[in-house]
Length: 246
Image (cartoon, rainbow, N blue to C red; front, side, top):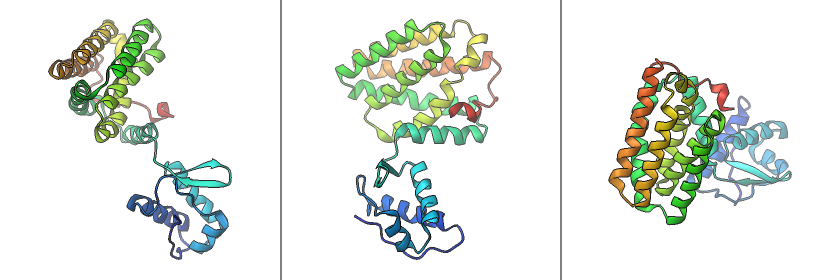
């Protein structure tokens, strides 16, 4: 399906083009997989130059609403969760959100994610989670690897719950919070072992399909993270420099 058009004003025309195509995507007039017309045709439809059109298309590409499977083909797509999460995390970092603010929300989202995972996760997914946990245990002393595996562990649990709203809501918050691991460990040397213990107990609860226990251990895990932030004196410190999310 092709986008409909109306003449764009000269001032900020590229933003109007991007906004109009985005609106058609959100309404469902343009669907994932639909191919957009070529640049010359689109430029004529909107009454702008090709250079102005390209600026609008670049904005849509940056927002993850269109992509180019080939240099000459432009298709509507669905933004990837990771892409949206990074953008949202960067926005929160620029807003200078604190560990306190992140913890207050995460103590609600992570237990809910664990509860839903216990109810809806498959045996195969639980086994994949076990593999991640084993890799985390083996990563002791490797900070970057530990943080990456920790993020994967929590994200996988959220995916197991089959709730896309929760997944999109928690991911950017967790991305910021859990990367605070590097700032906490120097002040809480047992923090790594406590992280392993919490993950192990959440995993055991998921395997037993015990939603109450999964929720309990997930909450204890976040509360423990908050205590670590307090020991490090980070309660009202900015969670992360936005450049670290690049």
